[in-house]
Each structure stands twice: as structure tokens, then as C-alpha cells.
Image (cartoon, rainbow, N blue to C red):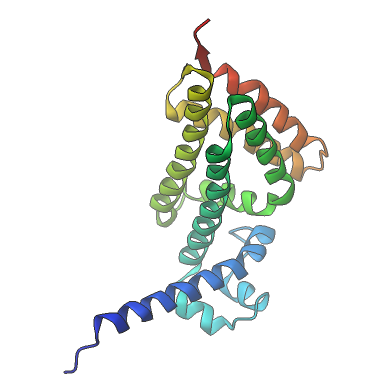
Amino acid sequence: MTSIPLRSRTSSEKRFEERRTQLAQSALATLGELGYARTSLRDIAQNSEFTHGVVHYYFADKVALITHCVRLYKTQCINRFDEIVLISRNAPELLERFAQRLGESILTEAPLHRLWYDLRTQSMFEDAFRADVLEIDETIQGLTWRVVTRYAALSGGTTLLDERATYALFDGLFEKALLHHLAGHEDAPVELAARVRWLLPRLVAVEP
């Protein structure tokens, strides 16, 4: 039997992952609109340039596709917030950039955030989601912690809570604001930004 060169296998695997990413990006809009329970692979194919057979070839089932979609989106989202941490030169600037970006995200990416919370809720009932959801959630928690610890460093202070408790506070604010936005409350993004501006400084103790 003739063996396949390592370079060829690597190239093939790269193309396979690239196509999976293309499919996931195409599927995000449909999933964000319909949610987990009401979306099938056939629905995703009908709302994209890909056939049902192609979608099924790259993803064994809906669980595999949705987790890939959410992982892809959250990675992109986290990269944008990490940029804020890197470019902010002082604590007030970091606070303002973080608050504004969270508010804007509610306004411009609500369907995708809704998909994340849908998936996280489903993981309470479906084992197939749980490991992936926990991993993604830990990644978002890590991002939140990087923001808060950087703010503390720029302020010359120390954090008052641990990583998990800190994340729970911001996640709760964000989910509540998202719900209000989806319910038609036009001020939800602005109110979220205001609450973040109030909360973050209170999570850091600064020596007088």
C-alpha cells in the first residue's frame, strides 16, 4: 500500500477545516434567528449556498455544527475584546472601551449572543453539548478576567473577587441586557454600558 505523504495529509486537513469554517459562518445567521431547537441541517442548507449533502458531509449532526459555529463566533468576539486590553493606555480608557464594546455588541450581534445562551441552556439537558459549552464558557471567563486584572494593574490596585465570581457578575449583566434588548427596550445597550462603568471600578481595591 502506498502511503500518503505527510504534507498532503496536512494540506487536506487544512482544506477540510477551512470548508467547515465557511459552512459555520454561513450557518450562523440561520442559527441566530431560529435557535437550536428549531434549526435542522436542512434549514441551514436551504439558507446558504451549500447543499444538505455537503453540510452533512462536513458535520455529522446538528450538535457538531452548532458547537463549531458558537466556538468560531466566540473566538472572533474574544479577539476583539483582547485588542481593547492591549491598546488601552490607562484605566479610564480601558473602562470606557470595554463598556462601549459590550453595549455595541448587544446592539449589533444580538442573534449570535442569543444562540450562545440557547446552547448553554441546552447543555443543562444534553450531554453532547456540555464539554464544549464548558470549554467556551471558560474561555469567555478568561477574557473577562484579563480585562479586570488589566484594569486593576493600570489603576494600581488589586481585584476583590476571584475569576469565577467576577465573570458571573458581568455575564449576568450582559444576559439581562440582551433579554431586554430582544424584548424591544431601546436603551438596553446604553444601560449595559453604564452598569459596566459602575461595576468594574468597584471590583478593584486601590490603595489611598
